[in-house]
Image (cartoon, rainbow, N blue to C red; front, side):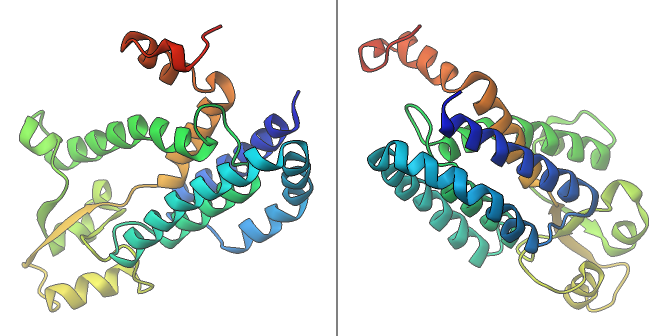
Length: 225
């Protein structure tokens, strides 16, 4: 097994562990990334030494994704833990095939992200109304948000990067009025989706991308096995 594959396997295991924490609490201890980087650093170094140009280019391209994620974090669209998770992948295991591994993981994470959004909306709507099922956010009474177990991880839209307790944010935005309606959206455990994406990268690599390129008539850019 090539060293970059070993590094990817290690990073995937760390991400799966972090993803479980994200699912359970919607939080990941920032110290996890530092602790995981200690055994991961030698693997990253070996990957860099085996093909320095590929490693550096892949890491720089991956850091562009991290930069975009950071901008989204500043606009309270993504959480800080998501940015740290992407940074961890970008540095520890950036090397992919056609694309860096982080690019593929983000692409593959789209499917579980959409499926989860549909599931959360279904629990909220309690119906199969397409307009509700595929909505990004909803207006909900504060009282229901506090009492309905199906809305446990929902939060005020645009407030995902705040360090405040979710209930404090809710009370602040609503002015303490339990009958008031606020616009909320489900809090996604995106690190878990990204971990699934990395697992798919480990298992199938860039095969779906290659098949799409072949179907579009660009198979001369890649060599299918």
